[in-house]
Length: 275
Image (cartoon, rainbow, N blue to C red; front, side):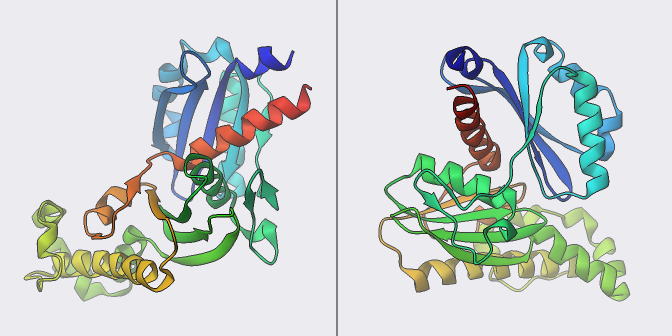
């Protein structure tokens, strides 16, 4: 029974603050994601997502979820998904005190977001002998530290790249109007990361460069000051590729790190339930 269940397809959902990431995992031939992607909550009302999953829906055994979104959005996603796969059990993964080698370092372990916890599970699974800086770049930018023994040492949370920029636009009317006048330059500086520290010549680029520099400098400062042995820096999340352009420190990108950790926990849960 155990082998049969672990060898079936699993649908994994990472419900973030602004978007949902999803993946359909299958153990054959190489324990891999057959399909993955992300979608805004507003787009759930369109048929696109269901059509993407359609040919695999009959083979999905279970649904595994990590969520930091609002209760209303959570229920919306649950109703939508269970409408497509009505017979698949729904499992919400929560943060634990430990998982294998990984030990939660928070004073109250449940306060560590389940998305951060899943990212840590995946990172420790991939790099079990390294000390880790696990950086999730989304609505908030979170940095978590794990030592070589798998002990989570805590972390930091700051507003993410888009959150910083949109906050300035919303709170300062003149900045917003001036930035809109230079909108055609949006993201142009990302093609020239060496220009990040040069002063910007329009308001939009000044805000974009400033927020990128603030986040990149914070990461670099933490790396230097911690000076961990056998250190591995892992970036994930929707804004990770942007921020990574401006890091001089060696790092790796893992677009779906949270989903990777989610399936790790799902596989263990299936095994424990069907010994």
